[in-house]
Every structure is written in C-alpha cells, then in structure tokens.
Image 1 (cartoon, rainbow, N blue to C red):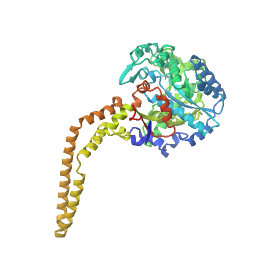
Image 2 (cartoon, rainbow, N blue to C red):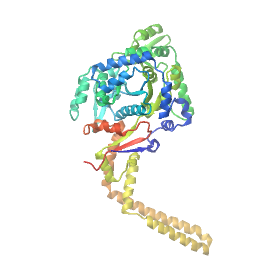
Image 3 (cartoon, rainbow, N blue to C red):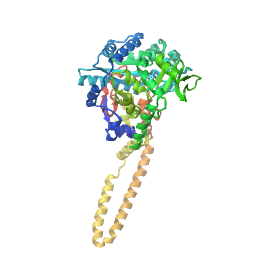
Image 4 (cartoon, one colour):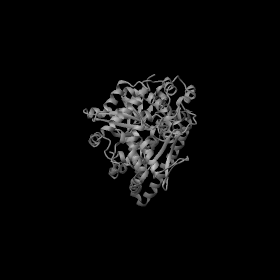
Amino acid sequence: MKVEKFDFESTGLFSSLFLDYIGRNEALDSFYSNYPDLDGFGKQIELKNFDADNRSTLVKCLDAQYSTIEAGDAVRANIDSLKKDKTFTITTGHQLNIFTGPLYFIYKIVTVINTCNRLKSEYPSYDFVPIYWMASEDHDFEEISYFNLFGKKYTWENDRSGAVGRMDPTSLKTVLDSMPGKNELFRKAYLEHDTLSEAVLYYVNELFGSEGLVVIDADNSEFKKIFRSIVKDELTKTTSFELVNAQSKLLEEIGYKPQLNPREINLFYLDENLRERITRDGDIFKIVGSELQFTEEEILKLVEEEPEKFSPNVILRPVYQELILPNLAYIGGPAEVVYWLQLKSMFEYFQVPFPILLPRNFVLYINNVVARKMDKTGANSADVFLKEQELIHKLVTNVAKKEFTIDNEMETMDSLYKKINKQVIKLDPTLERFVNAEAKRAENSLKKIEKKAARAIVRQNEDLTKQIDSWYGMVYPNGSLQERTDNFLNFYIDDRELIAKIIHSLYPLDLRYLVITENSKQN
C-alpha cells in the first residue's frame, strides 16, 4: 500500500477556522490550552491532575460494562492500568450509527489507538489508554438509523424514542437479512444483546479489542453522581450560556463563524423513551414535549437522588467527559475541533482542565479497482481533490496535447513577430503598436484553432470522460466524501486485514490528509 500526504489547505475541504487552528494562528491562542504535538502532550500530562476517587469509580463502572462480553487481555490490562495515577486516556466520541456508519468512525478509532502508541514510545514512564466514548444518550435516531453499502442505503425502521443506546437492536434483523454476506459479527451484536449500547460495545471490542481500545457508556448513574455539582450549577445559573456566548463573540470579532449556540439550560431530562430539553419558566422547570414540570427545590432534589435523569447536551458533554476521565486529548473531525474552541472559558469556570484538541486522521482509501481505473485515465492522487469537471478538463486536455499541440508553432510565431518588430521600428517607430496588435491577433487565432481541436478531441474521447466519471463516483459517492458516505464493509468484506492495514498506515500527530492506495498492479 502507498500512503501519500497532502496539506489540508491544498485539498479545499476545510474551513478557515480549522486551518488556522492547525496552522497555529496566534489569534486563536487563547481559545485552547496545549497544541497537538509531542511537546504539547508533555505539558498536558503536567496539567492533568485526576481525582483518585473518580479513578476508582471509572474502573468499577468499566468492569461492570465489560461483564457482558469477553474482553481480551489488552482491554483488561488497560482498564486495570486506569487505577494508576500515571495512566491517562486519549478519547474520541461518536454516535451509535448502525454497522459503524461512515468510514471516518474507523479513522477516529485508529487515530486514538495510534496516538496512545506514539505517546507511550515518547513518554514510557506513563500509560495511555485509547477510549471510544459512545454517544449512547443521544436521541437523534434518524442520524444513526442508516448506512451505505455498495451504493445502497440500508435503513433501520424503529418507532422507539429517547436515548438510542437504550433501544432494542433485535429489529435490525430485517436489515441483516437484506444485506450481502453473512455478517456474523453484526448478527451476533444486534441479535444477542438487549440494548444498542451493548451491541456496539460488543462489535467495537471484536474489531479493536486486540489493540486495547476501551469503550465507555456514560449513561451511568455512578458517572452522573460525579457530574451533580455541574448539573445543579447549570439549572440555577446561566454561566455556561454566558461564557460560551462570550467566547463565540470573540471568535466573531476576529473573523470566524462559531458553530454552537448555547441554551440557557444545556441539559436534557432523560428517562425511558424520553430525552427532552429542560427549560425554565419563572420558578418552574419544564420538560419540553411532556407534561413534566418541577419547582427548583424538586428538581435539585432529583439531581441529588437520581442524577442519571440528567443528560448533557453538546455544550456540557465535553465537560462531563473530562470530569470522569483522566483525559489528555479529544480526537475529532473538523467540526468537532472547531466547536470545542468555544468552550475553554466554561472549562475554566468549572475548574476542569481543557484537553488537547487533536484532529482525527482524514483518509481517502483507493482500492485496487479504483486505482486501476485511475491509472487508465492518467490521474494521480492529487487529482482526487479537483472538482469533477476540472478533473475531466485536465485529463482530457492532457490527452489533447499529446494528440494535437501548437506550442512549437506559437513559439515560432512569437519569434517571427519579434523579428519583424525590430525591422519595422528601424523604418518607422510608430508602426510598433500596429505590429504588436497583429501579433496578438495571430496568437488569438491559433488559440481558437487549438480550442476547436481540443473540443473535437473531447468528443472523440467520450470513453475517457466516462472512465473518469466511473472512478470519481467511487471516490465521491453521491457527490460526498468517501469517508463521510461509505461504510467500512465496502472494503472489509473482501479484505479482513483492512483494519490492520489502516492502523499500520495512519500517522497520529501528522496533520495532513492521507491518500492510501492499494497496488493497482496486483490482482
């Protein structure tokens, strides 16, 4: 396999805020703590002082969560190591998309694993545990209910509501039966477990357990007890609302558009089949979409007695995560990295260390089929970042130049007119402008001939255009990035070594876009 690296800016795929963050624009210095490089991680280790009781709670809860599956030695060793004060975590989070969802889920996980391995080699006296944080409390079922395999969309029909992690996954049997192949991994995950969270824990462990990846489900009453003081603060004050808005305004003042809009209360009420926003109307707290309401005294009593009924939204989830994990860095996509930049002052208020924000690996995976098609059209890896019409024009023009070119004639004509000019100037200097105009007219005439010839060649090369369209559609399925559309099964079904290859090919802390190409000469 060949791995090529491209600067993010050259791809045309990323926002100016994301590019300026990785480019270390000084205007953004106050919006984050340490930069995602080895030196930054050394500083973060010194910064992170994690509570011993919280470590004990973390290990106890992880042991309970893993009691439903057979975790391997690497996972068990990592969970045990979390008892030690010199063990830290590197975390990524993701929704519970069925069948893992788009490819970038795999890249997130691999980035976490590889980052831990890299840090261990750099700081051998510490241990680093890769964490996948399941967004089990998320209630946006529509977002997780489908995936794309071999160009076909598969959808989970389910009338349940509330936190997706609590849903019964057995109704996915219909999807499993309609898919190509036996898919025993997912069949066992979805049909032999009671909740979607348990199913995801099972298959993620099967795929990545040998690498020591630890999966965490934060929909847990013991974790929520640690979070109680922040929940109470959020219900009785508007601090996070004010702080995040202030950070957003500062970003706007230096020319960036914030991604998050905080609410006055950034919490959901969580119960069976229910996850709805909490709002305040005078002295009464109301649960949107229900008849539930509480006085301040009642809701604070509920926080104390049943903290699991309170679920953070996108604003508070990062604080919750950093509160219950000895975490050094959060690994996310461009949108995630950017919205975390709005949160630092809130972290400072709650006295929780702000983690390093490390972009995940971004990957275009070109398999043998696509690689051969690209070879036939004369395309290279850099060409994949062109718009399709630009690409077609470039590749067809390359063919056209081989079949018809007037470059030599243009040079000859230019030389001829320059020679004429010298002679004319001696006779009458006022004729120079006339000769130059004639030279320009002649140049334009040759260019017109070249364009018409190119159009003729394009018409004669319709097959080439179709070939380009064929592989480009595989790189950008449905007009979107491969990693945001295709499922890993597109490649894994035919190559069970895929994940091992990806782990070997991705480079943590190397902030560039990777194009991984299989050897097109093989098979």
